Amino acid sequence: MYFGSSLSIGAVIMNSWVELFQRVLDGKFYEAEQKGEKYVIVRAGDLHRKVGGYPGSNHRMPICCHVLRKNMQRGDEVLWEPPSGVGASLTIRYLLPRNKRAGSLPLDSTNKINVIQSIKKDGSAKFEDVARKVMSAYFGVPLSKRMVLNIPKLFDMVSYDCKVVGDAKYFTMVRGVSIPPAKFPVIAEHVWLLEKTSAEHKFLVFGNDRRVPLEWLKRYGHLVKDVAFYFLDERNQKLERLN
Image (cartoon, rainbow, N blue to C red; front, side, top):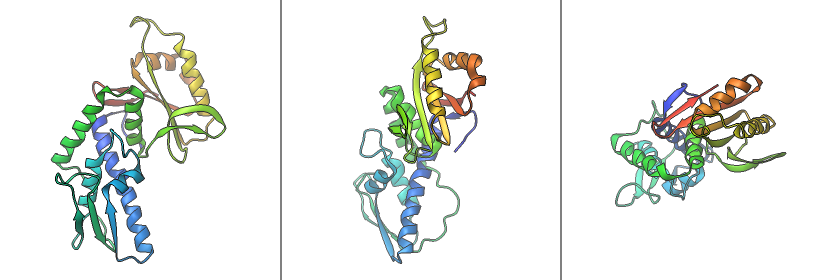
C-alpha cells in the first residue's frame, strides 16, 4: 500500500485500520459462506485479536466496532453491546450470504474523535512503538518485532509473512549542527542486513532529525538497492518518503 510522498499520520492510521478490520471480517464471511452457514456471529474482541494489537494500550477498538456496525444489513442483529456501544464485548450476528458492499467505509465524526484522542495519548510512547503503529497502517498489515530467517538481527517491524521488514532509528545531529559520523555505519549496517532479506518491502524509518538520513543518502544513497528511507515527523503528524 503506497501513498504520496507526504501524508497525515492520523488519516493513514484511521483509513488503513478500517481496511485491515474489513479484510479480516470479509474473510470470516467468506469462510462461513463456504461452509454453508446461515449466519456468523462476530465479537469485536475476537476480530481485533485476529488483526492484532489487542489486548493492549494501543488498541483500535473504536475503529473495530465502527467496521462491525457499518457492515450491518437488513436482518443482522446486535446480540450484545457495552453501555458505551464501543468495546470488546460488542457482538453482532450477520446473516449469510452477504449482499455486496458499495463503496468504502468512512469513519463518522464520533469515531474520528475517538481515534484522534487515542493517537494523542500515544504521544509519550517510544519512537519505535509509534513508528511500528504508523508503518503497520502504511503497509496495511500488522508489524511486530521479530527475527527473519537466516538473518542474525531482531528487526523492529516485520509482517507475519516476512514480506514487510523494517527498522526504526532515532538520530540527531551532533550538537544540533554536525554530522554524526558514528551513526552512519549503523545506517549502512541496517541497509546491508535489510537487503539480505527476501522481503518485498524493506525500509528504515527515522525520527527526531531528518537531516541525518538525508545526509547519509546524499553520500551513499546511490549504493542502496531496494531499501526505502522514511522520516516520521511526530510533531506535525507527517510520514515522508526520502528516497
